[in-house]
Length: 422
Ligand code: GDP
Ligand code: IMO
Ligand code: MG
Image (cartoon, rainbow, N blue to C red; front, side, top):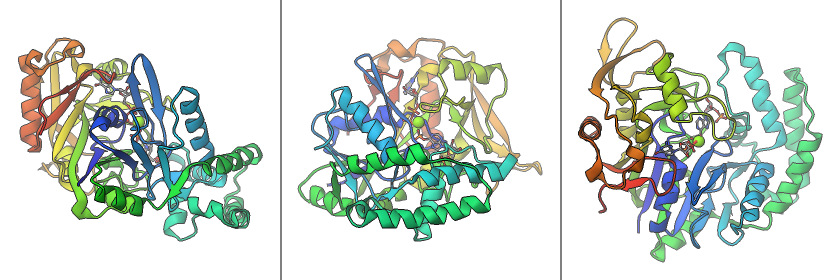
C-alpha cells in the first residue's frame, strides 16, 4: 500500500484543510508530518466552520486514525484548547488521535523566545506567527529539545533545565516577560495529553501499511516557506516539502505514492519576505476582499497577487507532484483579465524562467488571459465551466506539465469538482 502526500505549493493557506477533508473518505489514516500551531487549516461543511492548528484535518470523518507525527512541534496548551473545542462540538477524538512520542514540545519560553528574536531583528523580522516554532525546531536540531515521550518520565526536572537555559538567553536579550499563567495552562495541557495514545508513528504506520491501510500525509505551510527551498530567511523552520513526510513520520521514500500539490488560482502570502507577483493596487484589494484573505487564526491581512508559475514549476519539481488541485477558482470570477507570471526579470535586466537563488527585487513577466465572468461557485460539473476558465486550466496544466485533478469553487466541502478518478 502507498502513502500519498498532500501539500501546499505556494506560501501556505492554499486550502489544504478543505482538501484533506474532501479526500479523507478514500484513506484510513491521516497524518501531519511537520509544522505546528503556526498552521490554520479551515474546513467548512453542513453550515459549520472549523479551524485546525495541530490536529489533522481527517478528524471529522468516520473512524479514521489521525496521527501527529514526529516532525510536528506541539504546544500542549494550544493542543488542549483545540481538542477540547472539538470534543465540545461533538467530535470525539481520544481513540482516533495518536501522537508521536518523538514530536517536540513547544514550551512557554519558546513562544517568548520567538517574540524576543523577532524584536531583535527589527526591520528584518520574519513576521512569524509567534507560536515558538523557530526556537522549538532550533532546540530540536541543537539536541536540546523536549519530546512528547519525555512527559512520561521525570519530566519536571527536564523541563526546569530547559526553562533555565531559555531564561538565560532571554536575560541576555534583556527581554521582559511573564509566563506564570501560560505555564500553569501548559502543565494542564501536559496532563491532558496523557489521555491520548502516545505512539512511535514510524512503527504504527509501518504496521498499518502491512495491514493494507492507506495513508494521506497532510502538509502544513507551503513549499515557498520550506526552510531549505523557500524564500529564505523568510520561511518557517521545517521541511514543508514532500521529503518532510518521510522524515516527519518515519515513512520510507519507496512508500510514497501520489503527491497532491495544492495551489490557489492566484497567490497569497502572510508575514514578511519577497513576493514577486504581489499586487499593491485595487486588483490586489479586490482579490483580498473576494477571497476573504485574512489569517485563519491571527486575522492578519494576507498579501495577494497573481499566480507565479516560475515558483510553481520549482515547487512541482521539488515535490514530484503527480496531481494538482486548484483552489479558490471562484475568487477570480469577476475579473476582465487574469494574469500569470511566466518569467522573472532579474535586477540586471536578464529574464529567467527558473527559480533563482534570490527573488528579492525580481519583476514578474506576465501573460494575460480573458477572465471568465461567470459564477463558478454554483457549478457542480466541469461540463458547466466557461470556455475561458477551461483555457486557464489547460494553460496551467501545460506550463506545469501536471494534470489538475480537482477544482475547488467555494469553501464548502460540497463545492468541489473532481475532474477524473484513477
Ligand atoms: P490551509 O492553511 O491551506 O488549510 O488554508 P486556510 O484554511 O488557511 O485558508 C484557505 C481559506 O480559503 C479558508 O478560509 C477556506 O475556507 C477558504 N477556501 C478553501 N477553498 C476555497 C474555494 O475554493 N473558494 C473559496 N472562496 N474559499 C475557499
Ligand atoms: P498553513 O498551514 C501561511 C509564515 C508566517 C511567517 C513564516 C514563519 O495554514 O498554510 P513561523 O511562525 O512558522 O516561524 O512563521 O511563515 N507561516 C504561514 N503562512 N500559512 C501558514 O500555515 C503559515 N505558517 C507559518 O506568516 O511569514
Ligand atoms: Mg492556513
